[in-house]
Image 1 (cartoon, rainbow, N blue to C red):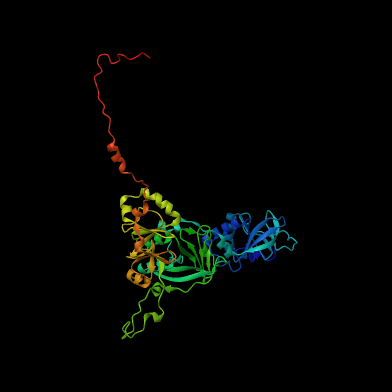
Image 2: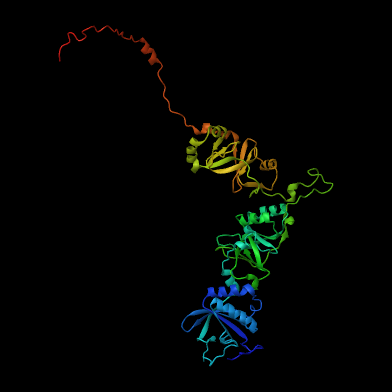
Length: 484
């Protein structure tokens, strides 16, 4: 066999090694078993994975790399047998079977096959030539493998292996709230903003998410962050790749040096697919992004000979953002026009206290029902909480920036006789207080009745009533009656 000689231990060894596997799933099994105790750092530079086709049309997987030493190839051969493959050694084209228990020092070929095929394999039970159909990229293969549930890697079990840091991915709406929560809880973390191209050509804006690099997360916060919808927690497997908590990869990624350390690949559980960040964003300390107070310049009284605040260009628009505080009492609800019929039917089930304390105003888009004692007995419509005597916001949201309610009312500039309702999209509608009427007056329809003539009783008094006298019947009451 060309290129095959004896090493220092007297074992037949060529410059290259090749593992023949019957399918891709057997390739995954081979990588999973081998990376449990060995790393691919010494193999990845010369590693080549290809789909090969024999003359019979069968397709198999050929994994070729530099042989190095017989010690390395012994471990590869043991793993290949366990995964259902064969191990060969040779040069770039001709490979002969590597040693086993039947031949402790290896094998040699009786004669070479005259062929121009890309691969010629010589085994003790067969000889076959193969053509290369297409290569398989190791990194792409690892990204196509879905992580599987692993309770040991979950925070819920308390057995998660210690890691130098965690990655937390947050949706755009949760990023600012999580930043504030981490800052308040004194979590040692940094934050950056990552983005990907829009998923559809119909979308103009790119996809953005907040990425937190958490150095240490207290146990009481791990379960909360891991189970909150819209947040994803990932454990680094090695530089450049992380796996979602509660999952593990079929292959030990710590032994696979195929990921760029300048970027990050987040492997999500289930069928969500990986998130590839080509380049890590700029990270900042949480304190750098907190709201800062700007003091007036020394010696300049605000509003008296100083600079008007509006000329500094720092005004911002009011926004509605999710709140993490305890939900306040729901004191109003908006019932769309399409649900007014349901409101009429529910009126028969409401108690007297709920009907007497509620007020309602009907508009072209629906009805607003307010009740200072709470509208919990009326589970219908979109709920509101009151932050000011005249301002209502959707339940679960708050006005941002976090200024006082009086400041919000003053900024809106609405007359005091109107009640202001924020919508979920940020728009505001105002309804006069006089438009609200008690719910009990608004619910009942006018009853139908007819007038009665009062003179009919007077005519009845003027009619002379007949007198009836009762006399004794006697001993023969039927005397004189004719027979019929």
